Length: 164
Image 1 (cartoon, rainbow, N blue to C red):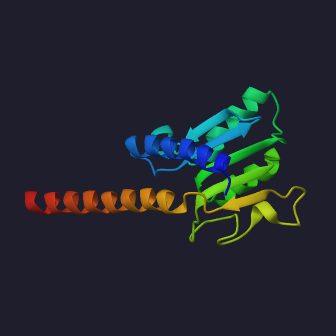
Image 2 (tube, rainbow, N blue to C red):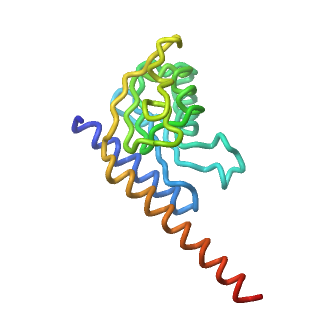
């Protein structure tokens, strides 16, 4: 893990906090080109009513507009959670050079945990992957969020029960 990776992952973590603040699963992503952020995003599927509004998807869309190109050949993506299959496919199609992520996703991770789309030799592009950058912090943010959500649901259930 390089100093640069830590620097950029802190930026992605701050975007994950924005997702939390909006009631979304706290995942943040940035696209970096030549030492500069050219795209950023945080999870927004609930607020946008769009199942594809993942942090990576939003960051890649912004970066592509910034670069005026759908190919992001010399760009790196930092994301707090291992990409899902949809986002991993997007990274391959956009030709991201390097993927750096924090926490592994044991349920839907497509960069090595469940499957490895980004390194598949059957596809026309493979991505260099660095995992585990601030994995504890990224994982804890997600754990805390889901713990809070479960507590909220339990309280809502109890409130409904008390009303009846």
